[in-house]
Length: 127
Image (cartoon, rainbow, N blue to C red; front, top):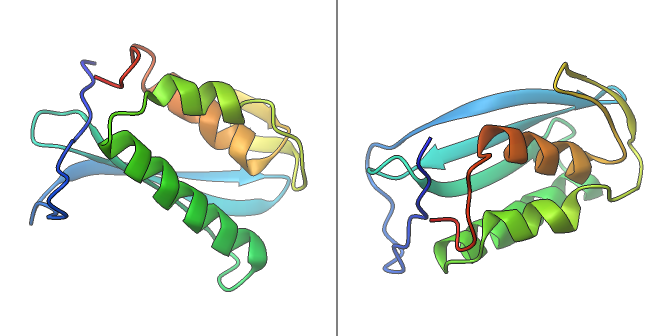
């Protein structure tokens, strides 16, 4: 899957855009990884939503995914985020409902490893 980064610094979001949502669970904590793609099929934006609305963890994951998305739009390589967040350790940690990521040491670890699987050929710069 070719990967380019949506580098639209104008702040505009396409009216229609493609992508997918991956439901996940780490030690019973449910969440959603939402990936949007640009018109060329490249990674445009990443959002992580945690089922416990209003929780500190949900707020932090929302802020982190916004920061990652802004970094990707500015040309930061996805591989750097994957390397940085894979293996992070904090609760919730434990079994997941993803056969390709059977255990995770944190929500960030689960999401980073899922992104590495979904976008394996992301070279430096994300392009």
